[in-house]
Length: 260
Length: 338
Image (cartoon, rainbow over all chains, first blue to last red):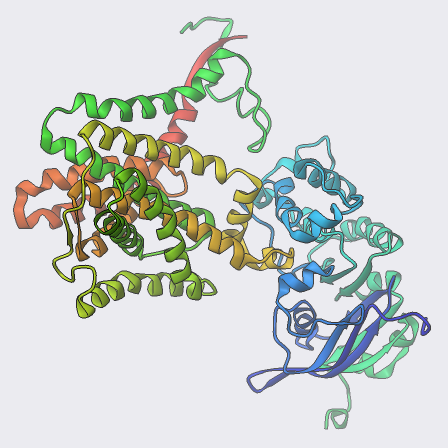
């Protein structure tokens, strides 16, 4: 793996909100085809990390490279145009539009026009049709009413899929998933996992922020653990699971001297 | 129609809402008629106005209604379809008015040219002026835009440009009242149906998405400032068009074209007519402007009654006439054979 060129290089980034250090000197590489898990207790800086990479917050110091290109503090739409897309932890569909019309917006973007959307061969067809095709692939039954329902009437499971569909419409290189499993039932997660694996097979790299460790460890090939904005450990799932520091961060330590 | 054992009641829009809100299936002339009737009433009604009204005073009111209808459309589009609540409508009107007056008096162009030029040129000017405020959201955008007409007014006063407080006199009028009123009514109809079509195109969906959720639009690789700019251009050009008409009707452009009325009355018309329906604001202007004229009989108490009417509407019909009427219209029932 070390022979391959990294897709995303995060180098020594730091971000403070007032007096709170959300990210401290963070560095890691994500390689093409990875499912890169990011875990950590609440407030450890996971979402800030996603926001920093996608340009939604400006980082104080450090550098972020995508495909060798510097994307540090560039506007979000320019980063998305390069193929780095994200889902939102708090889902953000266009509530007043039917589900399939939600995909018109990403399909209207310059990147989708260039690439044709997910599976589009460089040419964008009718946006309604392409949108319904993407929704079908991601688990909206085409012949049901579901793709035509207003987003405000859809249950959480579909909205999470809609978030992913919005990313796929851009034909992304990298998707940053901010807790796509949260709020889903076990059976809904079970039906999402094959989808995640299929995206990987299609050559899309994923960074997944999760609290559902069991499910994450099933699909991820590398895991980064954050605590108080710092990198605790990075490695393959087995290593991370066995690590004492991770257990302490998650479960708390008996011994207070660990914090001092 | 027929009430018998083999008949049951059915909602008028049943055939139209057969699947879901996004898909329409229209079968047969009856359903087409059901859709066309309200539109026809509006179009024919507006076109008949200049013929039916013979009193010269009220004929002038028709033109004023048309201008306020344009301003209200401009406000409704920007507020309910792009999410930018501009309180500075008067700035757009003033720019259109002064531009048309200058083109007419300095260059001697006829209204046939000054109106389109003031519309497009005014739109560009207003958009450039608003550009620095576009990153602002919500109430901050509203407050800053509220300052624009006040600022323009003081600048004209202080520098004594464009005729200062006297304004620009001697602007030419329309050849006759038929040209004035019918061209304005046709423009209002074109703007109304054009905007309705626009907001349902893919471009229109992007506008609406910016209102719903601008973060997700950014994450979709779309430059939202670009689309906000385009929307401000469309909206301000419409209001500039209203301003240009205003000067050719009154044959005068002055700082009163930047008055607060042009910012507030279109908002009131939108509230009364029903925001987000586009046709509602036109209806609101059609109701509010004549009421405002009728209330002149009360002299200085006029504003009090005006305010009371507005308050009554907001308290008892806050959704607006059109939203209410549309809902009721769809609920009509007819008898059908089973």
